[in-house]
Image (cartoon, rainbow, N blue to C red; front, side, top):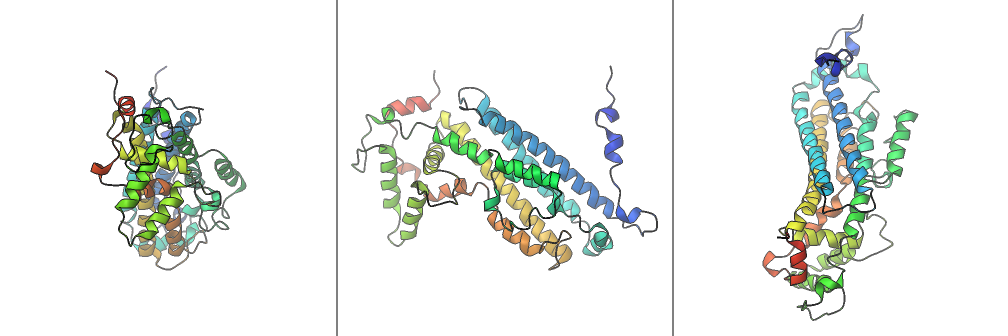
Length: 345
């Protein structure tokens, strides 16, 4: 059976899905309402694709072990990079939306109340799947108040499920290179501390020694990130996972570390593009409605600013760059470990 373009893409449904409120009988049509609808419909289609990619990644990472010697890790990185590129494109779509002036927006704004982008359950589901849980959200009492029950159930299910950040934590904790003493039998610590883990004791010694005397706060920060403190309920990456992630960043030029580093770097790019989207949204709202409240009942620009400051999903990965040292001062890896991290000939 032959497949026809229009039928394959269900274009009859898609192209008949734009119904501007001001175009109805008895209304005065607002020309830019069509643009407003098409832009937001395209956002939701791309959100669907992002969720599709993230779900596929979670399916792989939810396995008991991710096999780094197969194509699994490469597939994970590839699909997450696609997510980052889609998000970058969505930021660019704001340029099109901003061709609409504030006066043109006001010509139909009251007609669409209380509909709001704040009611995009797909975006909230994506945030939850990536790792933004309810306890870490800004405005918890408000962010689901405008949703219907079936949409709220979708978000709650996503928040109750394992997230990408949780899976990344478990994947990092399994990395053996710091804690497996077999790799460090012939290693001579520059700190003189021969207790296990030798590498970490040495790295802590080198990093803290590199700090200027007045920077005591960084020593406290270092200890908070890399020590297991059960009272720190804010953290989502364990101290073990943070140590492994830092090791990957430090030794990313070794072949076995290339893909793991790309994974961590891609998570930061996703966060970066989500941040870009939020800040572009803030500027657009400031330009369009100033200090007015949002159509969905939020405080508008003030709410968006507070959420943008708090909703950094992979901030615990980003903060590891605070603990880098001069590459020339890195501990030299023992031959046993160097051989493991290189390609086999």
